[in-house]
Image (tube, rainbow, N blue to C red; front, side, top):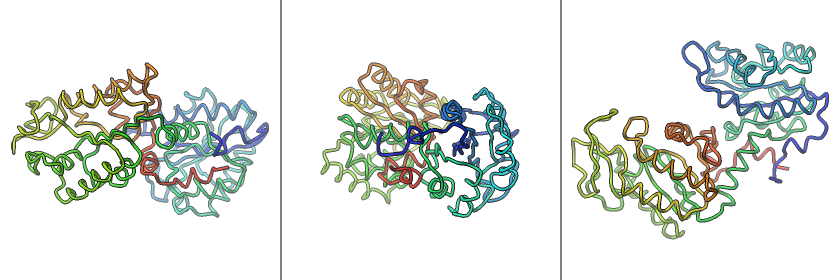
Length: 403
């Protein structure tokens, strides 16, 4: 990847103080214990590499939504133990991210220690992209490394202004992320398929409008498929049995027309799983589209015909981008379609026949539920940034790192 500055472009780091803007926005329980360390673990390789080059590493991040004021529930002090364990080095916590406390801690750093600074969003200036805040942030350091792809769609001080004030580069995680997304969407091996799910068409309009111009096959799934089914003439779908958005029918037809004009094949459900109640293990049955009950049943998943059709199309493809489950995967057995398609995509990936890139909160959970999260080519932990990249938007925190 030559278009962006990477750690390889930073030169000799021996004895330099490097600030690493990481994404340590991890989930925690009511006792402020970290419940999933994935983001911590994925940050560690960049820290280790910088340390191996002789750099003193100062880590900074946001956590939660403290809205510009100190809030112990969102303090990064809660992740020290997990970061220390994953890194295998002493982590010294500083209860501020700018000012004399930080300068003093940097001065006193030992070679085998890492500094972790307090939550950037304890200052409202961070979200405002304030340049003076950025100057204070980078004051004690020589080099700036940005590794928080998940926040790169935000024009925040630590994502854009700070990058401009010091010799800077992407960290390895952001580099990996941008590489994977570039390969999948900007320069893909074709045919290229996208699977897009979600409850409402209205929340993914930009995404769908961009994808129908870029991909060869588009699987529309989840609740948003109900609107497309209705728009394409499936009269058995209604507001009593589905998540159809009646005010979006014309929009759905426009998207399908754009797809046709761009030779993008749209794949919609051929059969559905309907349930008596919106809960796990509720009474359910699989029906063809013309036999969807008018009321008393809810569309929860897609059936075997649809699974076979999607998997058959996957066999023809070289690249898959996935955002959103096929059904209500959180409730068994309505995770069946998502699990089966995910397993098939994973098998093709492992056989070297398919490049698979997935992202978005629900998608990550759905693929973990299917047990395939380690079998895809790349799974992004970013939510909004992943979506905006798929929508074809430029991300401020990535653009600023162009060579």
